[in-house]
Length: 306
Image (cartoon, rainbow, N blue to C red; front, side):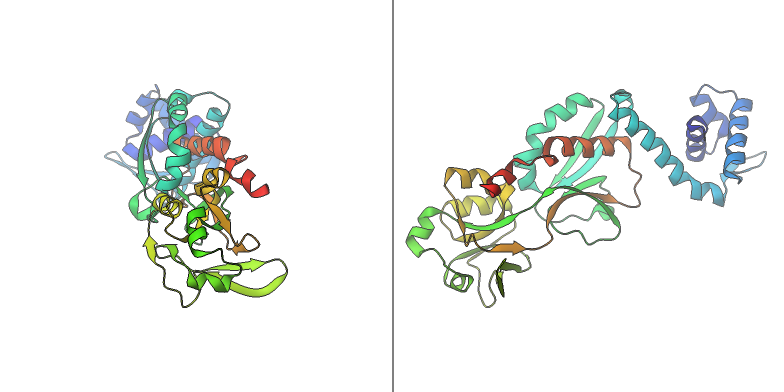
């Protein structure tokens, strides 16, 4: 199937003017009509209803249009992967991400992305709260929790190992818990609206949770960076992702609490986009860039192996 014919079809579907669409591709009206006729022969359906006064999409044309756009988007992305056609990748890309993750890992690498793709502009929505992709009109989002929405397509970027931690000063003042039951006697710093996470050990059938049942967190917070700062300042024990606190663990300003217990959940760092969206070249190159720079060997996972 000739992608030039598909490109003409998409332009004609958007303008509802075959001659004008052909003109954009340097085609005469007769050649443009011949190209569309050839495409209709290949797909086995009339894609347009034509009269002397107007052109409208047929039902088959409306059904074929999103697939035609996807074919063109994949062609652009394939060329971009080979280092070709970068100048054709343009437009504004709306990207939503955790503000805490973005501060540590995305913002520092943005200059390289913008240098690679000078015609792409980014509109960033950075919040540790979860935005609604479809309703918000976002092209792509980064999420660090289990994705259960069937209307989204997901690509795993990296692990999201979570641990309990506190500052050395806090533990010196309040003692180090030896088992999960002792957590209820400590000051707890908990992410707002979080669900309790199971705490398990490989050789233990008993399941505990964080925050513990019947406990009342001293502080609820909706920002991961602020939770890291508060824990480091000695506010209490919190659960945090390794990517958020790995430098503090290495420096010793935060210490792992209950290291024999693992937090059992399905969290990971995902790149997600709505199924209803065509995966355009601009989205594809951002996904590939983030996988290249972050996903292959996340720096924070090395501390989990020490």
